[in-house]
Amino acid sequence: MALPEAGACSRLLLRPRIVLFGDSITEFSFQENGWGASVAHRLARKCDVLNRGLSGYNTRWAKIVLPRLIYKESNAKNTIAVTVFFGANDSALKDVNPKQHVPLDEYADNLKSMIQYLKSVDIPEDKIILVTPPPLHEMTWEKECIAKGEKLNRFNSTTGEYANACVKVARDCGTDVIDLWTLMQKNNQGFSCYLLDGLHLSGEGNNFLANQLWSLLEQRTSTLPVQLPYWRDVDHLHPEASLLGESS
Image (cartoon, rainbow, N blue to C red; front, side, top):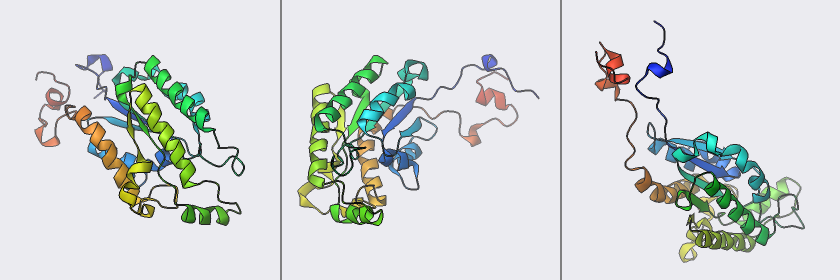
């Protein structure tokens, strides 16, 4: 039997979506036990969670490619949230890693530019969530650098300056922000458990971020319906009635 034409269906199923935009910490978020995968699992059959992470990217490059990834024709009005998660590469030391380094003032300006662009394609401030870079565990990351024949190319104190700039941009622009750098070091607690290699998130770090993000998304997504009936509720003798809303 031929499949029905799209126009014959009672309505197309257009799922709301959440877009995760960032660097490698976002790109890797759909790996096993990743924070993006965790959010996607919680919203299965309710909302599409799209991974738009770009490993190694800084805000200078992200600002350029953002209009190619999110635009009005891409159903921006159906977007529930966009995370903008950069800074781990921008904060690289200029004299050691000039390719990824972005000056602090430019980093802030780039974040503001991306927020303004998202607003121009009908994604307002209350749907934008900035995420600061996590803290850097210098001893562990230095081992990674040495293994590649390089010197330590980041400092946690410098990363903190970029995190603070991100928080200020969020405050000035009226967006939500998850200040990972501060939250993971709250009460002077050790934070190495949150990091796999000193820079990227471990399983515990992924879980930490997933919970922080979910605290912002839960209310926004709580009223989303589960799309299509549970399989036990499908009338197996007349499935069209259950799946297309057609009378038998």
